[in-house]
Length: 551
Image (cartoon, rainbow, N blue to C red; front, side):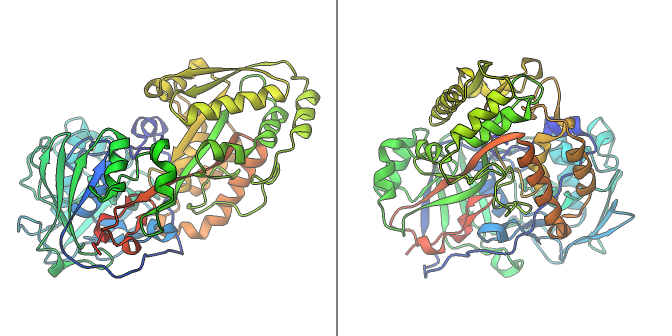
């Protein structure tokens, strides 16, 4: 995804049977420092959630409250770093029992749980909740319809999903898949798959959010103005392991001006800056100068890169692609990003299983580039003087990235010009396959923690007339063979194939299919009222509101 929490539903429709896998981690930093329970904090968000109905919401801002207010069968560990990518049982009692060559999942739910409205949680509520998300046209519905038996038929008018059965007496759910699908648990962990009472209306309930099961409740929605995420008083007595009960009530205010948003937190009239927003350059140095108990730049699973079209001259020549990668000064790019860039060369970011540890094939990304050697490669390939159009967005610092990149291409002997277009139309434009853009800026942040979420962008199955995410038009049998082998691995076993993902990512780096320049950091920034040491920064959901505490 381009820095949002929406999934590739349109892309996955095109991919059909392609399977997504989930990552497991082994290390974390869980926060520290003593705070207190009680009180209320104010979070400022620059963008309102797309919906306040869990079956519809599909953005970063919606996920902030969704994962703590609408638990499903599984969720993610409340931890920082790679440990936060681990799937844990929520309403389920344990990991699923997988049988029938990976095509049948049997899941047992916890007994005695109650929704925030007091209704008992039943196994059949899962079936209802999945069907509701499909009926309401949740953006990620294709994860279900492409893989669960009978889900497509249900989306077209069948009365139920034949591939899901539920036994309320036994508390068991059985899910039948059309083919092995290693990412099923990740799909079940989405807030949109959270269980809902069966009397929930089959319509958009954004103005009056439905009851759910979790440590928080979504209340008092004033569209585009504010909403509350309040402690669920009934949760502590039935809390599931690994899902904390929370400490404070959260009031969220929508503030579309990021300068005002940042100023409010800086001046302590608000408490938490939205991690999905960008700190304004005019205030950046002042904010960065705050003590370590108010501000920290957190690493995310976001890769920044320049795509290189492997079907268009000059980048259909591997020497030209190698030259670009050798010539990039990633430290210069980091300065354009106010230091919020970690230079690297690999497509898979450091927070994902499969990120290589081997040296980069075309030089140390933290060192000065070898411009002379890169220029020789261009001359050797006979490509000196080749015209190149560099595509980019008008927003800062992405425009500056592209301006710098064009200057590098010119220094290599190409004749580069930039084509800067409006940010809102940039990706839809370069996703039009018939344009065959030569090169330009791109980024990708995990939809959920797995390597194949990134590798969809390098798969030939991603190539389609519109919505094409494979900007480089890469079609490599080695990649296709690797994806076919790795895609069926259950998420709980992903660590067993980490070395194979590393090998594949090292291969892609050697082939110079993408000119990665690093991974971006995002701000964790609070008022001086917050116990900063206890605030967890989750790799998927950013600031974990259930860990917020007042000093």
